[in-house]
Image (cartoon, rainbow, N blue to C red; front, top):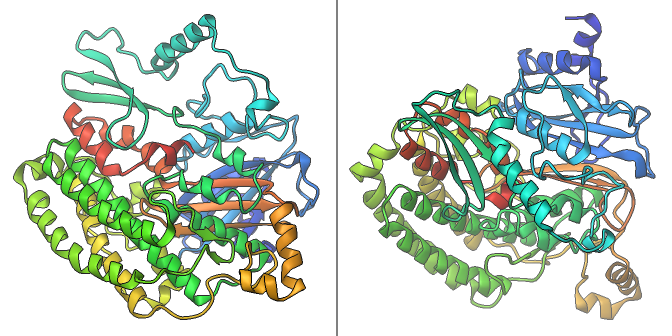
Length: 573
């Protein structure tokens, strides 16, 4: 390895970003060597590629680094042993939008690079299949560039002509050939379409499957049917008004997407959240972890043919949602978290509702253990199916229960505690074999630990305010607005124009229901974000389907899909 690259691996600049993450600028010709070094060198050992995205810098007012140019490629990588993160940036000129692929180093770079090509038009040299990811092949332009329209009203009325319809249908039919998935004139093989449909509650997904008899030769996931351009929307909304959009990303996990977003804004603004608000956030997040796992459990078991448990699981989920409604006023999408705290204090009687639920659910989880996990048909359908090792999981960017099932004891709430998780006692369930069975079993165990956390929140809920008294936290408490002009004026400005968050960048990661969920925000000192990047666990996990499905039977694929625990809105955003 060249000496200059070796030195670059060990000499990091001082932390200049507001989130304190080491940020390194690397030229394109040194990128592969640099990434290889920090992944394989034992002193660095950043083995997990969390995310790849890009930023169109051409409209920036605050150019924060001398190497910044027209576009910036941004890589987020993770060291699993201590949770340390690194941000690697690659400057690109508009007339030379290309970089080397990292698919030989990290297989999960495949989809991330395709997404960057789709959204920004940045080419990755040596990529095995550089096609559109979320947009149709016929789409003109790259949506996340600053010169692309955001609202439909900016582009005139859309009309789907018969000619356009035929073109799009032909493109869908030609997709297997474009991706190199053909039957090779082998009479024993067949190309099948699974979808596009809405299997269970996962969302609209299409799988193109090549089978020989009942054995799967290859699988081609086709996503984007659920794409709504949430990152683009985030760049046109004010900092506060984007919060309700985040609920809809993983629509069974509610406030879990509020959580990293508001924490990232608070990091940019230097806002300290009161202790009571932090504890309320944890309480609601763990309630939604249980709600999400109940949906996963019921639908997964239904996918493999056991019908009764889904009714029991959804009944228990309904009990939890009624508590969410009592606290927040809404059920699935409460948008309850605010910049600087939460929308309101806990209502009268909240404690009794939650105590009743946490005393009720453990017995039901024991029943699920007997009804499902000891059922010999369920065990036959799931044990040894869709298995991968811890090394493979890290290479594919798998986090959450899917990683812990391989024996890796990594939970962000423990490794890098946030919002007071370090003050709570709970265990991290792990297994030694990541197959479909253990991925289901771990989520049952996680629900039990969430109940422990919730009980501690109820027993130790601190008193005090639920919103920071900060000029960028909105809305301010009514009693403060009526009392002094120094609170009224910032409130009026924020409510009419929107809060102006100081220029900078911040990336905040949490342990969401399905794995690590990251919001990477860039502010240009305006009333809305300059760049919103949402790293969801479902996107990383879904691209493992071909890897863990080759060689299994068609019926096993259904079990694998269910055990991944993805939501297509979480994939497509």
